[in-house]
Image (cartoon, rainbow, N blue to C red):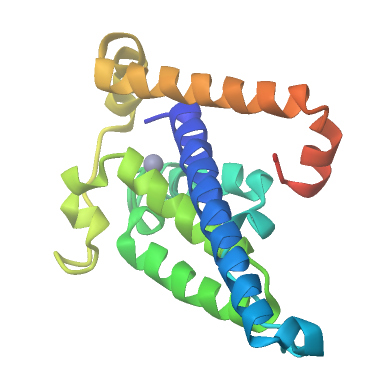
Amino acid sequence: MFIFGHIGITIGVGMLIEAITNHQHTKERIQQSESDYSTGQVVKGVTNSRVYKPNIIPVGKWLDYRLLVLASMLPDIIDKPMGQVFLKDTFNYGRIYGHTLVFVLITGILGMWVFKKWGKGWLLIMAFGSFMHDMEDQSWRWPQVLLWPLKGWGFPKEDLNAWLSGVYRAIVTEPDVFIPELVGIVILALAAIRVFRNRRFQYALKTGHIN
Ligand SMILES: [Zn+2]
């Protein structure tokens, strides 16, 4: 998958998760305030004394879509220059460490720690975007990469010139390549329309929130 597919579909899934967790959060808050009210805690003011702990839900509170755009391309941002340019002689391949589940796991675990400690979600966003990227790349077709190092320490190799011409051919001829690109463009267009319609373009640019 290429740029619009990766960015658009990842943003779309992010918006979906945001909407679901928002809904869940609102429901829980209504239930909480009902139970506080029935136990008299609201009257006594006990609810205000709860200790602050960063809550992962609702996701919309910390989900920065600017970072999600970056995260949706992160495996390629790491692997393409490293595997096809700087360490070309060693790898000669565009899917290496950044496209592995190990990378997602490490960023995810560290991301949870950073979130719990400082309430910052940027590393979790990187883990989520990288995971989405791997799925959109259909990485299960290259288990030697996805499951690295379970199937050996090395990575496959490829002919870079053939890869480039294959990329151009795939964009125009292969439906499983150009359809996700179109879907991504439609999602991005819908998100942009929503931001413009709410007159929140500057707000979105400044904060990374699009709701
Ligand atoms: Zn990729």
